[in-house]
Amino acid sequence: MAGRCRVCGAPAYARLEYANLQLCRDDFVRFFERRVERTVERYGMFERGSRVAVAVSGGKDSVALLHSLWKLRGKLGVELVAITIDLGIAGHSDRYVPLARRVCERLGVPCRVVDLRGEYGFSVDELRGLRRPVCSLCGAVKRYVLNREARELGAHVLATGHNLDDFLAALLQAYIRGDLRALAKLRPYLPPEGKLVARAKPLVETPERDTKLYVEALGLEHVTWKCPYSSGASSFEYKRVLDLLELEHPSVKFQMLRSFLERIQPLISVRSRASSHALSVASPARALFASFAE
Ligand code: SF4
Image 1 (cartoon, rainbow, N blue to C red):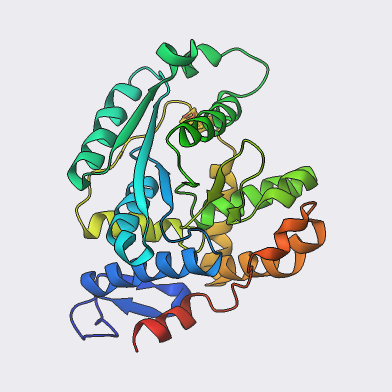
Image 2 (tube, helix red, strand yellow; image 1 turned 135 degrees about the vertical axis):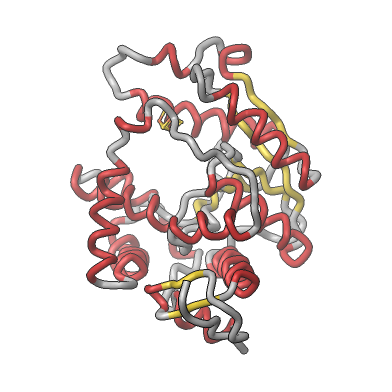
């Protein structure tokens, strides 16, 4: 890539159009981790001393999340445990489960592997042919299992690798469906409620492309193939639309996030606790870089 790192002048590794910024490999990795740290702090995701359960599927997002939190664990004062679900998808589970185990082992993070077939009596492959799309059912199953396992592991928070693009795709989907309930719950951090463990999305301010650059920069092993059911997932279409918008209007994704969280979401939120969490995302990439380069 032509161009030089804005921080040190070394050859650029990443060009971040949304911030009009080029960074070398090392400075990009620092930028990425600093943003995760700031996101955790901005939304009050973890308290010091918390046990954080990280959902690890082996995909680039969950691997980037686990790795960055592992590097930040001392600063944040948290203990990490990982949860991987063997969904029982032929030709997929037998590859990503061992990979997720290896990723955790390398970092020394304890990994609870949940065998859906053995422990819950069914696999995702067996959900085919039901009325709802497989991905929709699989998503519901994962939410249930992750919450239950996180609770049993004594975790205070369940952290997932949902990135900025995932968040906005869910936003578009809920908006198009007029699903106010989904919009009200769409937040970077949801506090604990009844039997629900608190849920956090520390990559919510991180574009999907950046998680790919991060795992590649560090040579982190991650899933590079697709789940056989992924072609039916509507989120891919929403992400394509978002990418087209971003191409014409760099940083529009951050603007969407900010507008939603600051202006729209509070109005439709049905949970009074929403106001107890800082929702400001007034200083996205540029401001982050300013503080990062100090
Ligand atoms: Fe489950 Fe669909 Fe994701 Fe495959 S692509 S793991 S079926 S949600």
